[in-house]
Length: 194
Image (cartoon, rainbow, N blue to C red; front, side, top):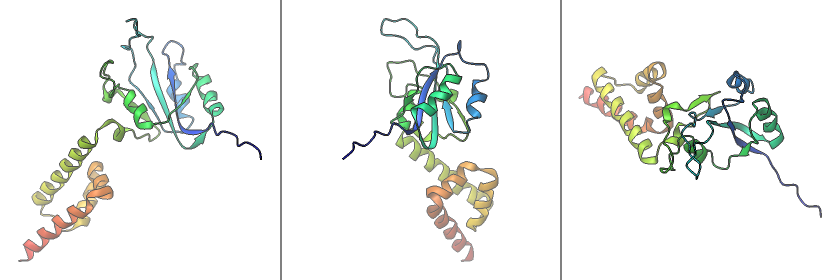
């Protein structure tokens, strides 16, 4: 029996980019790879254990739909003069590390300074479950008020409005709020017919 070869491939990879050594067009180089990726705020306030400020750097996370090998990613990091890439075992943890969300002893960078490219979506990683729940409820509340103000009695009218004007509402209606909003509209329709 032969030993199985260990798979060194994974979907998500991270590496560091230093401003003084990266080509000026490094974002374009990454965009040319046609892969979703996220870039942290510039980490220019990180401190070593001895109190010395670390060299400014960005953290980058590449997020592929399929697995990529170390050598495939190393080809990319070589173009950027970056250190050795690392596997990301937890995309949520990496996204949160971009701003030190779970490291209160470290400098807290702004979530708004995270840049995403190629359709990368890390927003869900940066909010707690309770924050996500509150955002969802706020969106449902807004939709109910809108329904009342506009006299909407058909779900399709709200859906058409959301598709054209409110991407956040459209996502809620597609993902998890259509049932409650549908019931709300139905009850309004029945009130009008009485």
